[in-house]
Image 1 (cartoon, rainbow, N blue to C red):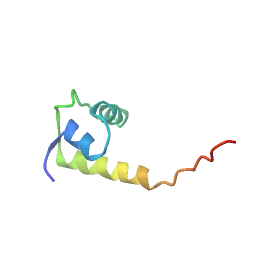
Image 2 (cartoon, helix red, strand yellow):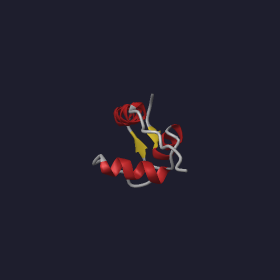
Image 3 (cartoon, helix red, strand yellow):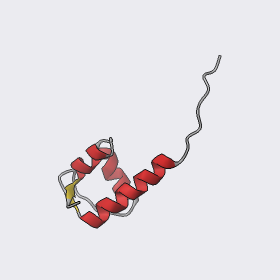
Image 4 (cartoon, one colour):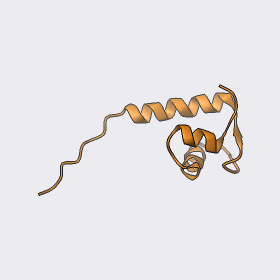
Length: 65
């Protein structure tokens, strides 16, 4: 995988570029805009982190009566 723009990676992760920019900021990565490139190493790190988040089981909410 080569460099990707932020908006391209956001599309792969089914999120908005704005949400991804916030996640990157939370991780301490400085990205100026959705058009910025992310290097291959960072892309792989982000993909791994989001795969881990998705694998965690979520508690099902039972509808209240």
